[in-house]
Every structure is written in C-alpha cells, then in structure tokens.
Image (cartoon, rainbow, N blue to C red; front, side, top):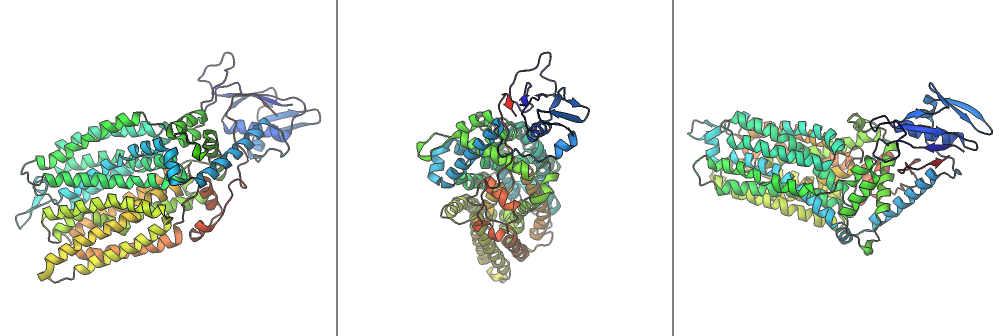
Length: 626
C-alpha cells in the first residue's frame, strides 16, 4: 500500500511536524512512500494534488520529470505532464480516507443547503444576530461617501461656497463654473476607480477587516485637506484622495454582508448598504441647511470638519469584528472559518444549526467553483461563464447612473435652477434623502412578500422612465406658471426618488453580490463598480452642462434625455438580468454553468450534489493510506 505522509508546514496554514533540519521558511515538501497493493490512479491523484498545492518532492521514485510506480503486480512510469493532465478522479470502490472525507463533506454540505432553503427570515435573525450587527457596522462606512457626495452637490447651491470657490457672473451672483463642478465630481470617481482596483488585490490578500480599518485611517487624514482647502484645486485633490478608500468601501461592504449571512438574510443585509447612502446624504444636507444663515467660511468648513465624526467609532467597532468565514475557507483556514462562523451565530435549536455542516457547504461551494473556473485574476472574470456574470454585474451597476440617478444627484442645484430659492430646494432634497432611507425598508417589504430582484428592477425602471418623461414635459409649462411648475418638478423628483429606492437603488446591491461567483466576487464587483464610476464620470460631465445657466441650460428638458437612456436599460434588464432570489451560491454557479436564460432562472431546478466536485481536500495532518 502507498503511504503519503505530509511532514511539512502546509502553505495554507495547516500545522504539521517539520522534517529534521528544515526551517519554516523552506518550500513545503511532500514525502511519498509507495508500497505493495496500491492503485496507480490513486498514486497519480496524490501526486497531482501535491503539485496543485505547489509542493516540492522528496522521493526515491522521482527522477528528473518522471515518477516510477512499483506494486506487486505492475511497474509503470509517468511524467509530470501526464500527472497534470490526469482527471482528478478516485476509483469508485476505492476505500480511501480521502474519499471518505469527501463523502462526509458533501453529505454535510447537502444538509446545510437544505437548512438554508428552509430557513425563514425570523429564524435567520435569531440564528445570525451577531452577523446582522457586524454587517450593519461595516456597511455604515458607506455613509461617509453619501455624506461627502451630498455636501458637494448641496454646496453648488450654497451662496458662501460659490463666493469662495466660484466666479462672478454678469448678474452679480457667484457660480462654480460647470467645468469645475464636473471636475470635482469626477475627482471622487477617479479616486474610486483607483481604490476599487487596489481592493481587488488587497482585501483578498489581507482580509476584509484590516482593509476597512486602514481605509478609515486614510479618510481621517484626508479630511484635513478638505477642511483647510483655500481654492478649488485643493478641493479636487482631496476628492481624488478620499475617493480611494470610498472605492474600497463600495465593494467590500457588499461582499462582507453577503458572506456572513445565510440566504434568508442576504438580500436584506446587502441592500442595507443603500440605506447607509441615504443616511449619509440626509445628515449632510441637514448640516448644510442648518448653516445657511452663516455668512462666513464656517458655513462650508464645519460640514467638512464633521467628517471626522465617522472613522474613530467605526475603527473601534471593526477591530472586534470577525473575518468573513468564506474568505478564510478560500485561504484554507477551515478551523479559523469555523471559529468566525460561531462568532457570527447564536446557537438556536429551532434551526438545528450545525457549524461543521455550514463550513462543509462553504468548502464544497469553493471546490465546485474551482472546478468551473481555474483562476482568480481579473482576466478570469472574462473567461467562460464568468464573462456573462461579469457583464451582468457591470451593467446592473451602470444602470443606476443610466436610469437618471446622476440627474437626481444634482437635485438641490436642479431645483434652484428650476426657480426655487436655496432654502426650499434643500427642503426638497432633505425629503428626497429621507425617502431614500424609507425606500430601502419598502424594498425589504416587497422582497419579504416574495417579489424577486429581477421583477423589482424591471418594474422600477419602467416607473423611473415615466417620471423622467413627466419632468421633461413640465419644462413646457409657460413662464407665467413657472413657480407652480417648479413645485411640481420638486414633487415629481420625490416620487422618482421613492420609485428608485424601492427598486434600482436598493436591489442593485443584492444583485451584484449574488450574481458574481465567490472566488471572483471582489474582482467582479470591482469591475462592475468601476463601470458605474466611468459612466458616472460621463454623466457628471454632461449633467452640469445640462443644468448650468451659463452652459446648455436645458432645465427640465434634461428629463427627456434620461428617459431615453432609462428605456434602453429596461430592454437590457428584460433580456439579460436573471433572478437569483432564494438560491445558494452553488446553485447559482450551476445555473450559469448550464447557460440558463435569464428569463428561465427562477423556474429552473438544479441539484448541486448531482454535479458534485470530484475532489474535496483533507485539511488534516495525518497519514493517508492509498
């Protein structure tokens, strides 16, 4: 019988005895001891397994690139290339400890999957209350971006800010030129693009917690640049620098939320990110409005200074947060993943929860994805079935801007140009951001009664298109009734905001976290959010010119432009965006692997265990008889 002894320090963190004379920094080494009665296929499997783990070899039966196999009945030789190309299969009747571990893992994974399917919302909350808390805490980081983005849009309608950073117009008023409005808005987008690509490498290498805490420290430092800026150029530098950690938050918060909770809670915790956007915006517009009466520099410096209120409490809280168990499983740290999972749960007999079963489900899904996709680089996002998933994630993000969101982001400035005074314009904006938060709860209710993500997205886009058309037609109202038309426009923007938050604004976060594969999730969401930012840059250039009286001065007619863009989004969503609601990550992997049409996703049944992985690693330091 062939006996494989792992006498090494596994590169993935597994502890084992080191051979005499070997330092911990040496490459991991596999010692193979063949004996009589072993099978050739099992021997090849063990060698292939070792090669995939990047072991070096110490064996009297290995010479150059050739392995020799001896048993009581045969003598065979095979090369390293043959081993690499050998299918990863065990003989069906082979009574190996490795095979037994594989069968046990699959059985546990199946039980955990069934329990997740049967888990109700209330059961999920009872079982995962700590996961809810930690997810909410980390997602709150997004509120900082919502706060600052809102400040910038509100400041364009602020007299003292325009006087400091703008230019004098012919009518005696001050305005920040359209080119600088576009530049400031795009500065944050440029920084976010940089931060997003950095996150694709950093968070997967160092983990989510340390990445978030580092970004919070960076934001605290950059806030000083905002606070002391003496010209519009310095503000642009601050926006770019602050955009880097914001870009990281945009993907990492959604990913963490999707990985620490079960299927029953996934849609709610991922969409809570959008609530944090609304919360930050509401706080920001409230602060700006409360300082409208000031006629000095503190009218805009105090709002910037208040950005320091976010990082310190968040850093303290996140220090104690558990790492994502999915990330730990991908790193081969299964025992650490179990400890993290237990820190996320509160044992409850009603759900019959078993941490080992849930961890085995994560291991099974990870191995299934490794079988389907061989790599985990940005390039792999554009290969095979992952190309379709990347395309959908990218477009779902981009649709947020293409459906008129960038137009809404200038609501205060837009309403002022439509004829409202700054105070009333900000009142409408406060109402809009309040609706943004309430809309998230409305979306939760709609999801809880069984309405799917695809349906909400599609119906919501139809509503947005209608509202934008109405706003465009309000621009045709005669000048004599301009005040009434301005109020009607403001009211219509509130209805638009409600429709947006009940659908596209909220559901987007759930879709992007569910459609991407686990192994490529960070990178796929990074690519999607970067397309969102690129589209946002284009929109941020166009929108100020549409609204600024010194540029195109379209006013309400801009609604027609965005209505046309929104209609194209409706067509794309109908044919390409699938329904991921109620599916485990493994089920979604197989649905995409089988190339199921987006319109048939909800009704197609799949069995992830009929298409099970052929190999599940043994994460123990023990001798394995082959």
